[in-house]
Image 1 (cartoon, one colour):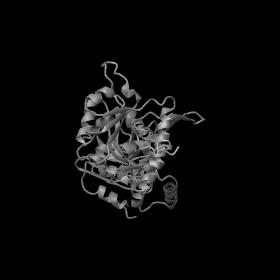
Image 2 (tube, rainbow, N blue to C red):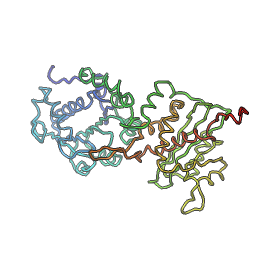
Image 3 (cartoon, rainbow, N blue to C red):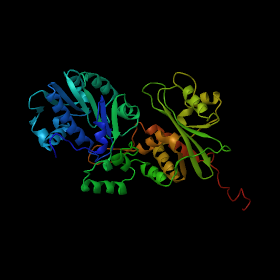
Image 4 (tube, helix red, strand yellow):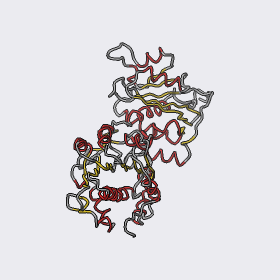
Length: 431
């Protein structure tokens, strides 16, 4: 390779061309994004040194308890594989610096050491690798530390959740003066055959996780998730797409009740129609900390103002402060309501099994149910952390409220008021 040149995937050549405050890449495994950004960080440092600028290049990750968990090894290997870079850097066991001493690399964990980033003087470049879990608080503190003239901020990550602060900042609503692209394995001209074999095996044996791991999609399946394989099957069978409302059939809303505090459980609601033996899931809604009036207004605004609302058994319970239940408050707002009786011990497992039985008959409207389907794909069993690795029942996390409301839909479908029932022989006059 001629001195002073770096070979990059074509998409990343565009990222590093011209001026920008933010540069970044997101995508799946095998895209060469981390290695490419490590090389370009070394190039950036050398360019600063040659311009007689002194300072530091900060390489951050959300979690880093030691240098072994940092990007140091990646940067070292990137420099050592390029002779003209290697000639201009000093590399020690715990340091990387230009030979003239002007530019030093430093490696920090943003979760516990964000204050050290704030106190670092003359930051020329902040590169955050594996940035998906970086909190909004960390971004708010780290970004303003980059204030030198012509300094830059780089971000590389494998997307997991659409709502993560990193995705919201750099993918969903990227900042001005930014060059951020998606790169995946097929964009890497040096993608190794060994890794391709692993990729193809994941595609064949783990199809519910493949899009996230290799294609840079948001994670819609947790390992051991209850509904992930069923969602993948629905996708393959074309049951996730454009689903229309039947104007002659009633609308049903299945709710998992939340609270009105900022730290309350989420209020979740699935909108569906039971069309013969088919379930059409038309819409999904979720909110945290909002009063009931907001949820009911959403129904009206979306055209579901005549929906029949189904509540879990605690919907009939009275509020501890106000002598009113969700059921009575919703009735007063003009909606018909049914409360599904308490299924007793093992109710969560029964809802899961009811949903699994019903899944082959379910059609989802893709555009309006994405957030709910993401939650269903994540909903999983909690495992013991000891050597036994036994199941402890459904994990109560961000996905469980959506899943509980979905399970309520399935339970309601299997009850007499939920779907048309076959007439018994006595009713037909045959006995």
